Length: 117
Image (cartoon, rainbow, N blue to C red):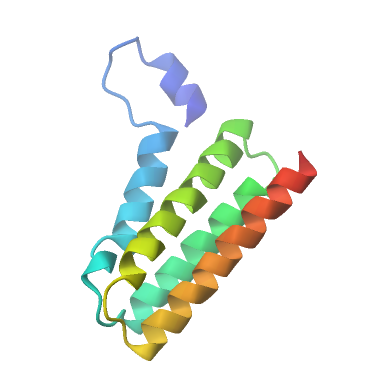
């Protein structure tokens, strides 16, 4: 993707790595602040996205550019903020446990990435 971004003239219409990360986060986490329940499929999608971001943030993905690692770390911080907002709403026990687990994963990953740097 980064190569494609460089090939498009400045100001041209291009799909960027930050846009990709933002759209994937939105698909997985939009509507979270409403509280209530999170479907099993949505929870699975959220776990997959957080796991992938963790791999990228820790530099565990062979061949991934540094920009992807940096964006992944920013994405984890953004997800933590979404989770904090959702915790203010009334959640069912599955959703509460799921979000607590995701928040712990994000926190551990970010702490580990700081240690690695």
